[in-house]
Length: 374
Image (tube, rainbow, N blue to C red):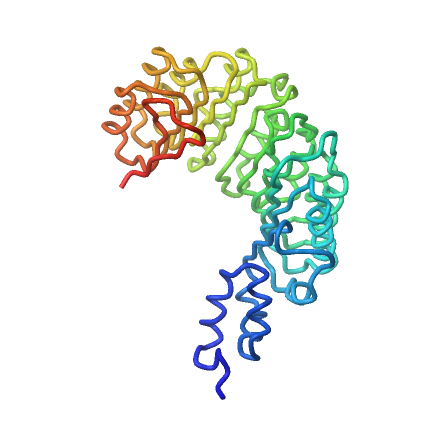
């Protein structure tokens, strides 16, 4: 009798198996010899997502352990408040640290709520270990890790990961502990870095100058989150430094996220005319109309995405209409407050590249779903 996978080439089976969950891959590997070979080949594991909430229980499955050498890009999900999920994530990271020669990308995503007063020391130690071992690591994304990141982690990456292309540290913690000095050392040690996510307090004039250096490789993305008290006290960055950086990297895109912790005077220091803002997210406790108008006047050539969380008002409607008329390159706009019909009409009329929007004319139950433009 022919085996179930006998009629399909291994590369076709691998293409199918790479879309399966961890459990389903393990089940497929037990069907027959042909499926086992396909399910464990490198093509299946090159880009892998693992959820510690539903796929890992107890000890690391032997099947997964045998395939970790093939993993180049890993997206790891876990729930820090659930001990089994947390233990599984730490165990997996430590195993990777012991054999991470081929790892190129790591993205950690926490689900659910983190325990109160949880500093995440065990998780961060495991991340340190991976960074220390994965000398070929090119992409590290910690935006969804709800723990305070510090200089030690950045310096570890600087020492051990010279091939880094992207590093995202702009997570949702309310305390910023990464200083500009360690970021400067990172830039010196990682000359190919082209995407960086930081809290505003981690950025400095010297960092902008380092990025604008003549021998610097092309730099594409700077994501800045302004959400903690340290960000509100950050030193202002002169507009001239942004002019120089933009001249050196004409394709640079900046993503700005301004949270309620930022007072009005800090907002005006952050929003400099020469910043090439491609994405702007406003969730301010104070004035939102002013920043929207500022964006309309200064970011019209670069702004592609706008998100606003504010109270509805006639002034905000007028500011949004002005922005729609000036920012023709917008591809998405999301306002989490009720807007007037004229606002919706303005974005539809003036933004031909618009692909998705959240512009509600009446209150709806949350979550508000965006509208896709055909």
